[in-house]
Image (tube, rainbow, N blue to C red; front, side):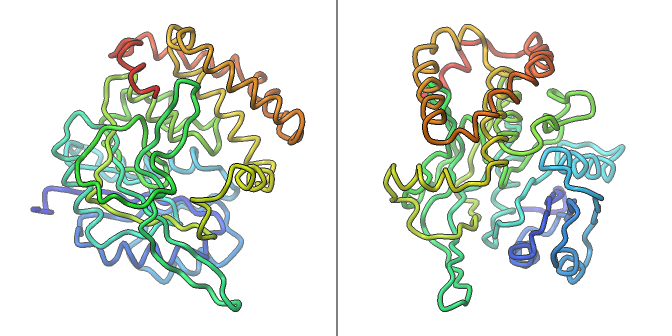
Length: 347
């Protein structure tokens, strides 16, 4: 690939990310693709994140005075990337959104950017994400890459259950480029021109979300505007997980693990789930799939009522923000597809 024709920014948001950020930056420095610049937006880290970043040259660092969350911080990074390219054509420019707990295979960027460049109607492309485990053995960190899939895109069911595709399965060595409903925000390559078709005021990622589900919201809006979303399996990256074996745990263990998640995370995820649907789903599709949606939502509510009442506040948070979220549905008046076309993505 003739790299002089390409340029990308690698946009990373950190918040107390000292445990992982060095591994990510080292993997970026080892890339076969050289035409990129790193932008890090730090959400007021109080650990050694900034001192680790300082050891790596040629990084644009934006320091926030407080934790602005995923969406607002990444919007600042995107604006910075667009300023770099002011007055230049964006057809051969790309913005890679990347979590600090990612490690890239050496040719990941080369494969990913070469692929999305050719796919002119693709707004976002993701790599194959495998799991890298960070287990503690005798008080020492033991990091090991695996062939367990972390995400091969994101899928959405008729009940609007949104999950990572193939998560926990062994890698089947998929080699074919494929369309998916959405791509994980842990690692996505974005065509900048597509963002202008769904921009909300000064926002690309919805800042009302703060964090969680903002990746699905972004991809859903782009799909509604006629863009495609794809996975390039030949581009491989690894996503850190703490414990090996969670890909085969029982339903009871998954429920127990869910209860152990911080309340703040569960509240945001549950609230943003409703907001994502209310903002992006066609009413006709919701009516067609209402038996599936109602069954799942009633089941979730009853479970939370009996076993996890602390999360019930998410329902109040969601409804409190409903007027603002519903106003954002106005973009659907300009949608480039109809309800039937998007309905094929609900499995």
